Picture 1 (cartoon, rainbow, N blue to C red):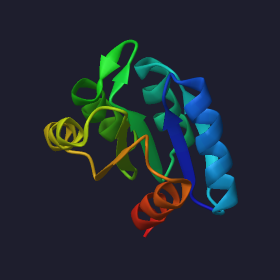
Picture 2: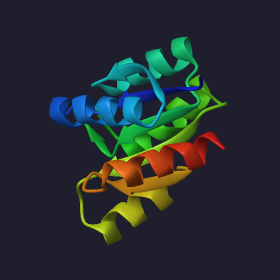
Picture 3: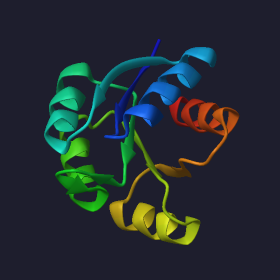
Length: 119
């Protein structure tokens, strides 16, 4: 089963996201709360999808995405954030991610987005 790496420092969201992925038959292979851990986990775990929060304690998505692409070129990147939708769209475009989604999305929307990226 292809794996998903979660890169988010919000523990409550990460716990919920992991539960949602289990409910839709997606394996979460790892979790990172900093950019440094995200890059190391991406390289070591070789996930199919990396879910990355726009703002981590040590980097924003525009800085982190190129590093993740280098560490795990096979991975699709899904940008998530609680920022307003227009700002999220702008951040996603600037970071050149494969998809973006609000943290306010439903579990079903999260599952659909991950399955779409898994192909």
